[in-house]
Length: 231
Image 1 (cartoon, one colour):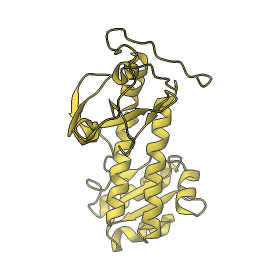
Image 2: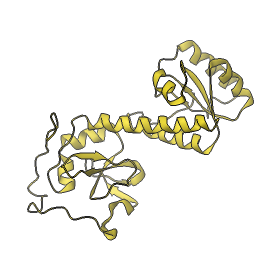
Image 3: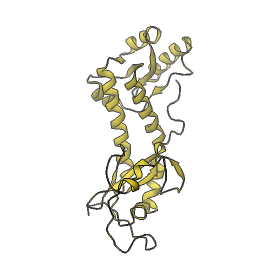
Image 4: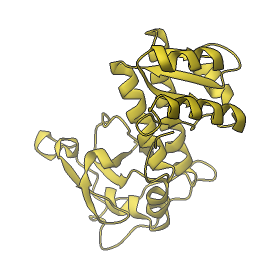
C-alpha cells in the first residue's frame, strides 16, 4: 500500500466471500449504460454527469475520465464534493465489492486531470489558429472576428477585465459570451506556448466548443454550479 493512502474498510454486507472480481464481459460492461448510480449520493444520473473510477491490479482507485479502462467501474457525481463524500463513506470498496486503496487527495487528482485536459484542448485550438492573445488584439478581435469566449488569467487585473467587459457590453455581446477565468497565467503560457498570457479571445471552431465544454465541466466539478457564465 502506498504511503499516505488508507485502505477502505470492507463492508461485510457487500463483499462476496473474497472472490476475485470477474472481468466484465460485453453484457456486463458498465461503460455501455446511459445512466449509472453515484456511489456517494445514490442518485441515478446520466453518465455524462458522473466520473468513472476503476480498481488497478494493486488495489488502487484510479480515475477513468475517458471511460476506457477495463474492469468493474464505480461511478461518482462529477463534483469535488461528491468525490470527497465517496472517500468519507468508504463507498469505493463497496462499489468494487472488494477492498480498495484510495488516495486521500483523489478529489484534487481528478481536478488536476480535468484542468490539464481542458488546457490540452486550448493548445489544440491555438494550433488551429483559433486563439488570439494580447489585450489590444483581443479588443480588436471582438469587433472583427467570431469570438465565442474570452479567456483571462485568474490573476488578471480588475482594470483589464473591466475594460474588456465594457467592450462586450458596447457590442451587445456580454449576455452570451462566456469568460474563462479558471487558469493562472503560467498555465495559459504553457498551453499556448508563449509568455505573459493574461487576456485571450477564442474564435469559433469544433475544438473551441470542446474546450468550452471541458471548462464548463471543470467549473462544475470545482463547485461553480452554474458552470461558465457570461461576462
